[in-house]
Image (tube, rainbow, N blue to C red; front, side, top):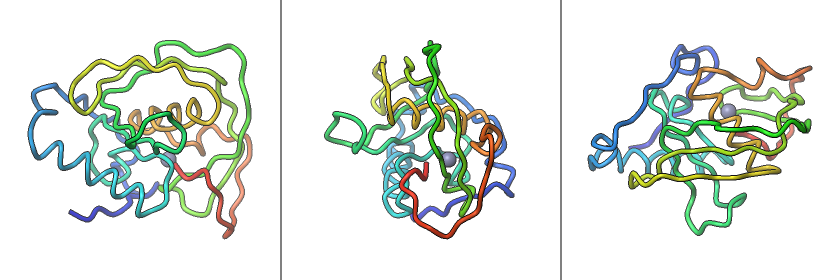
Length: 165
Ligand code: ZN
């Protein structure tokens, strides 16, 4: 199925997404949705994507393999921040759901995230740099939070920026 991007004007993007049970995760339809979500991230040239961004308010996100050491794009189910570093960094972010808008966001520079894999296995991820940033941006999404809520300033531009997540 070909998914479309839901934007900030649509209520799905502002809803708190629902946890996914292991039983639900094992359903073929849910596995197909994970594939569709990966496909959508690639097609819309995101480096990460959350389910609510395609109109499905469940706690599943995808992160490009470009910023991990994995061979496949990373599917995270029910991801949650378990700890964050005190040290922060500021980087300009963008979002597929807020097209043409960018702004600097201060976030902890290191995080630890627990989640389930798409097969229901527990994952414990320690991340820094871009991966830490994408994880936080996507976990915000499943809580209905957008980067524009946190950006110190925002600007509109037509230029291509590689931090659409
Ligand atoms: Zn986003």
